[in-house]
Image (tube, rainbow, N blue to C red; front, side, top):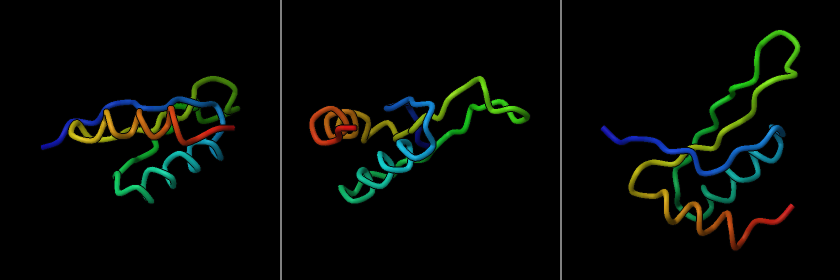
Length: 68
């Protein structure tokens, strides 16, 4: 079973979806983990996760190809 690692953290669900989408276009499977508290959504963040064998690729793409 693959381990998942955090490759991007943001407080914006839109940015998390953009990162996930770009990674998917590059063939990297990513998931978004919503760590926002459920009632007021004031605390917490969104974490984009990639599997063990794709972490370095994902970080490289996020660092060099995605700008906000």
